[in-house]
Image 1 (cartoon, rainbow, N blue to C red):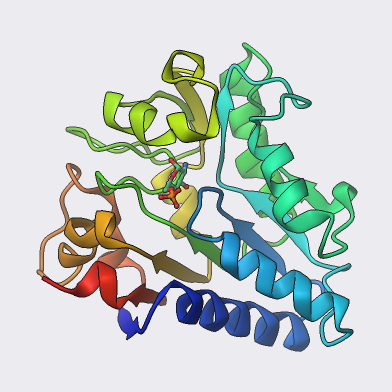
Image 2 (image 1 turned 180 degrees about the vertical axis):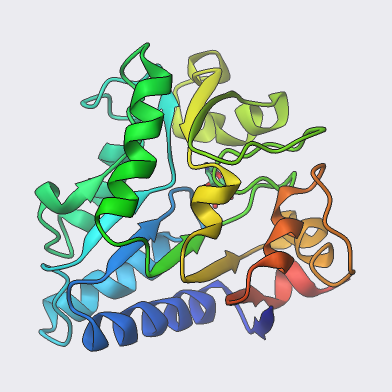
Length: 240
Ligand code: GLP
């Protein structure tokens, strides 16, 4: 695991965009695994700016997002699909036909979860998976627990995640209590992982990357087992 501490969130966003842009230049039809939340927004803005300036073409990438709330209609303004359209796909010219999400609209979770993992494999696997981390150490919606789940699956959200994500909804009552998420094995199948950690709230999660343990009570620590992980964190998350 290569951990780089950078001055601030802007520097993290720029470095993340550099890394994604370099991959796309080398492999214009690469598969990107993408994350939602506040953390990657700066990197997405940076990528969209490069596309607008004519320095980068993202029109041939294929994307797979980590997760989606459940239940969640595709056209709901709080859906991750909508979030990604607004923050990356539309401004960066990524055709929606090349974007994929776990299905949060159906009760047939098991069938659609298996299909999602199969679709990733059929596309040739994810070349680069972008990740943020929750305050409680969750990645995607793999919440802390006695055991973690390997494939894409339906999961209940913890109270702390519901509270943290209430800012994207009118009130915390409106936050769905479940989500469909890539599992740990789905995430681990990515060739490279780029984890972004920005802000004081993420201090504990970042610090857990410096000891030698993997702990299901802090899912981000499992990334120590992956052979190619880069962490870009800011001073605010690092400082004591
Ligand atoms: C959500 C997402 C995660 C994300 C986390 C942190 O719960 N499912 O993929 O990493 O929030 O979000 P933020 O970047 O807003 O702190």
